[in-house]
Length: 72
Image (cartoon, rainbow, N blue to C red; front, side, top):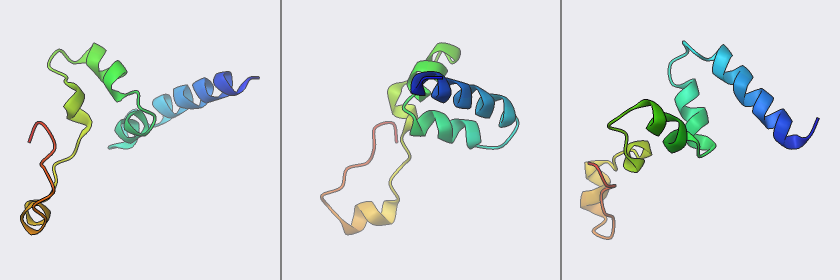
């Protein structure tokens, strides 16, 4: 089995195993860079910035060099 086939099999197994687990599927998609491709095809209002988290207001206040992530 090639590395690509192995990774595909692992991703599929995790998709099935973590179907109802809170956040595991989302974190897998985000970590592997597949969130935009998969969720963009499923959700009509999906944008590329939906994978970003907001920066805390306190961090933005204390560091003027930071800029809030798009979408927040």
